[in-house]
Length: 210
Image 1: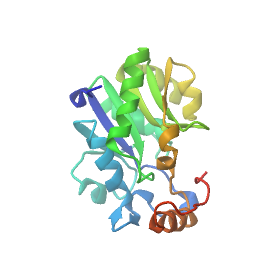
Image 2: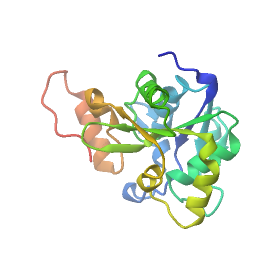
Image 3: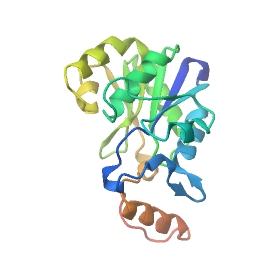
Image 4: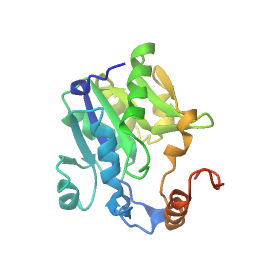
């Protein structure tokens, strides 16, 4: 399926507090000589003509990556859905795709699966699943859900899975590439990813990061 990238606005989610990383802004942490956010941008630019960065600090540093930077509309650090809502208020495309800033192995061609599943099932939202668990911050959403999301957040809710359950959800199967969802939440996660990706192909690795 050919992706109509002009119909999609990508949002790289980099607006969290990163408590488990000691408060360090995860999107700006370097892996293989580049900030983590750069890998997310590369992936989402493959499927979206317009890309935004959702951030609540270091706004000038994020702006240097050449994309508009959007902050949470309300109190800062309200979670992924707040970043999505800010994107909905900014974008003019019918679809929005969110990608977290801390999963540097995801690729653009694989993100296209979200588009395929949403279209095949005529769903409201598509989210990624690795065969064992859902990865809801990798999602494609119709912008027409903006009012519903605004009401959901206005009621004090923040959980992504709870919001997804309110809508027609398509599941994109990534069990053949589950390791690409490895994310970096702690310094130990970063060290583990560096160690695993430096091993020769075919060597035994530890289990996926949870």
